Image 1 (cartoon, rainbow, N blue to C red):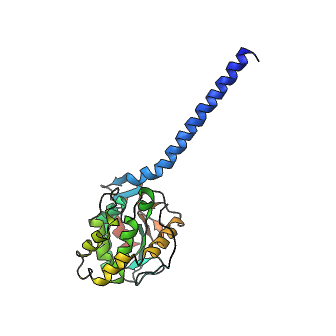
Image 2: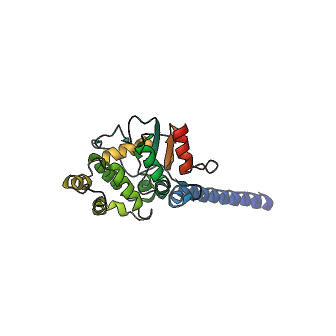
Image 3: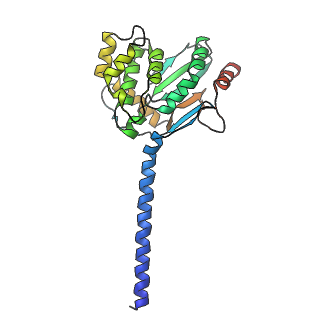
Length: 252
């Protein structure tokens, strides 16, 4: 073999090794984007938009009997009057900063529409932040919210959890004593029954089942917000505001 051919083959092998290394780094970066996306919330405060990109994975494994909270319909917690003409479907994770953004901006409007009998809300509890960042705070907080549903105080406790949400990277809600302490902000919720429900994780399997349903839904981020089955939140080209939501519900 000539010296020229040997040099040519050596260069080709070197280029192949370089390309393989680039491909390996690129693939590693893509895998990491799922985690990075969970940490960075893309928030449009002025437009009333909040969104966090995440993977739908989770470390919660299905298993055990799924004990639904009182009044739940499958894996849905319904709120508002059943006779309301419009339905808002919300997929949320209590550790998700984008979910807090949505709640902080739209909470008052949603409550007003519910109180007037215009809107009912169907909540799906999701645990994808646990899967992305590790920990159990999404699961434990969702179980506590389900325990509050047993007591007929889901909405009030749901709001307390978002108003007191810790930093996404701090798994504060994994501490059950913290969740019980927050129940003190809801009159009549901090009872022996509620404490027992939280401490034993009575609805953990049900929450996992709810998260499994989200993984199969085709949606991949929280919050996912649907009005009459149509996504209305998170599109920067069609920002949602409280006034716009009210108009969509009232005027159709």
